[in-house]
Length: 189
Image (cartoon, rainbow, N blue to C red):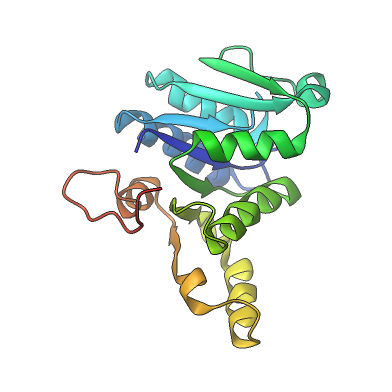
């Protein structure tokens, strides 16, 4: 595993714990010698996770559509900022660059990107691990909905079982198999 793709908000949300978790996650990624791939913004949780990883020496790649570069205030201190044509190209490129996918708290964009990687895994287009950093139970309503979708026969339990969930950055990364001696939960892509 070389790069973790992170999906999260371009805003910080209402809880200070979201920002703290994003900073902790970025620092933990760097401490493991991994690189970070994310949406390229300097604002919100996106900026926090990138800054924390950069501060600890990680390579950080941002991927942002040209029309959002000015709107989202593109981060100018990254290892590399890739400017792409549109959101479809952004999502494809972030999937291509990442070896695992982690969602932190965020809104529609975060959900859109994370559900796309889940769907691609379900369709067999990749076999890379997917995870939720469940800061202060942020994702519990979503997980309840997904369990409901399983109960109603729209999602198979085995696909939901493949989503790794933890409230702690270090534990989450360990569960994804990034620490030596721990089993990798998913087949290599």
